[in-house]
Image (cartoon, one colour):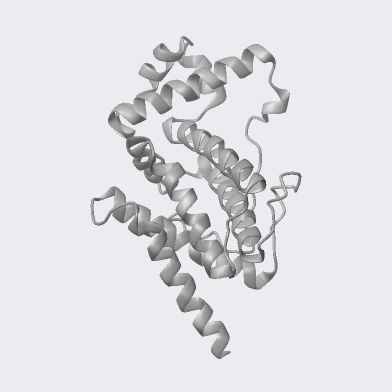
Length: 223
């Protein structure tokens, strides 16, 4: 979903900037307050409303402390996006997308993913801008998002439960499945950008992905 062309479907890599497992309970509490404050500000006024001093004030931490956890507002919002992906993973593990075909399951998956993201529309628009910001300091989070979405898409293609115990740093699926997942993620992102700009409704977003998936399916059948 990133606008950076250097990410391909098979060479995504991610690295932890500040692993949560190494944080003390008090540090984790501060981090969560920072993220929560940023999300609330984004939902009120979009990316422009997420001013770091305001985030620090709302989360009751010093501005210098905030910078110990995050590089900037895009970094914070991408961390919040990770929380949204975790919710989607749990939902897909509990109840995989229904359908008798890969196309039906993929359509259902992107319907759920879209609903989950756009339920907070201003936050969603801020996240989309953060994904496309081209900031090298957020590369790890963008790559991690790609990998986790790929795992979910591959599970939907196969009609399997998402394996929450799988290593998210390892690319899921076959080469062909990863190619399909990569293309569908980019179509989804482009359609979400169109939604954010008022070109079409949120309901149209998964339909655009379905169209792309159907065209790829036709191409594969011809081959």
